[in-house]
Image (cartoon, rainbow, N blue to C red; front, side, top):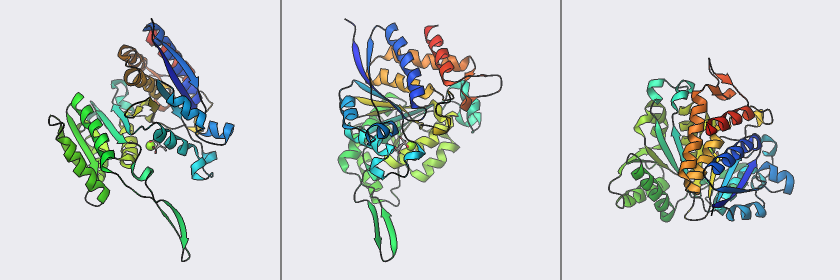
Length: 360
Ligand code: IPM
Ligand code: MG
């Protein structure tokens, strides 16, 4: 009997629908090839959902995600929604989805693809061989802390958020970090600001405590400002970086640029149980939406992570990754990565090349 999996697709906004179409074609082809089938349930999310229902994360979308074996999200957001109250903006829908599915662990791998070494703004000798993983806590910290808000008093306006972590939230993300470090080169660097913040001191204390469960992993600690510097100075020193929600948000964008384009990087968000959420780390790129110019590769690589981690279809995942590498090695590029001597393609044509590489 062939296995069949339910994938909830969230194309979202901007370039989302274009890159979703490419990912779906590749998923169809690779699943046929490996003898399993995928059933898609496409749901509105972000700005698209605001337009359709008035809310960025309709209850029906969250339900469909809960019912899936895995969720594939493209991108959300557009400047046109920036003036809405915070709870009604696309970004709040994404935070609601993360919280609603209990996705506390966000994995953001940054691996330099040899064909793209020249695309980075950093020197070849600095970035060659970089292969790191940001493990970012995703359902706590200052993103979700209370109290928060905006008040007026004594003729002034004051706004505030709370950066807070409980021990169990740190413990569970630390375990994910140690576990993954153990499966890689065995080094975990925990990022904090323990020289200033109480919340970071607890972070450091708990990471030290959980280290006892993983004695084979080498643990180091780094202040977040230094980590930001070391990432561009000597990124090869890092294997797994363990971060809180906000620090990981910032450092993962910085780490992404090591690879030349944020258009190349996938991510996975996982909970204790239930479906994972897989999405490119880039945004919805409203400036190029609908123009067939988007780079679909991060989305295809996110689909590969979905196959590997979400569905345990390792061989199919590896095939998608190989198709991306082959297509780049053959000199095909979208505009974001275009270089001399390469062939520039739009999103759809890139999808066709990826399909051809998959079937080669
Ligand atoms: C990310 C994004 C989101 C975040 C935004 C869109 C809410 O920047 O996934 O990194 O800040 O987590
Ligand atoms: Mg971000």
